[in-house]
Length: 271
Image (tube, rainbow, N blue to C red; front, side, top):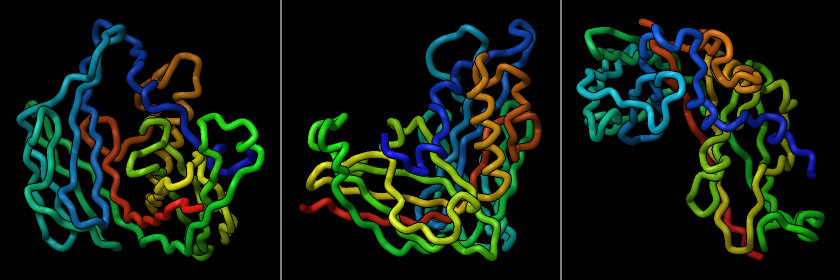
């Protein structure tokens, strides 16, 4: 097994989040779960609204329709969201978040109000990507012909305290364990200069490799850290109180409203 930093940073599968253990399965009221983000990419941003499920239930979490969803920034810009499909809301117009600005998510659903506020950090500066053959993996590849590793080079600013979220793609498809595993890190683990840090997945010849790096807030890092700790308990994600997982949402909602710039880089494995 190769010893890579990303393997140490991986959260357990978010799929386990659906195995919610509630302390009072008869009395606990369904909780609004929010998944939303604003990035520096010019696009229609999205917010997903669902409700927590009773203990022992199966299937998808119930969606929340008919909600009022909007995002405001500290420069008096307002972006309204419309429901495109049950529980999935997208901004009416495309927009790009700006570093240094603060964004507030406002939700009104089922007669209740919820808010979350977060400031966008500066974008990460990436140097380059490269690739090489992993000789050990080539001897016995887990996936036939996929024994190329892609390496990341980046200079991490030491004058600031930074936290990062990573997405990895192969041929345009998110490959963080089918989108269920999240990789994150604080800058203390990166030690200033990243020289040839391998991606946590392998590639084949002619594959397209891509990485996205989000510069997340300390609160977002706390959310992912708490989530990892809860997933590590024998009882599941919510083996204790659900409130053990940090949230930036008010009104009793859970989940997180992520505001973060993203930098990306890609290359083709060509030899």
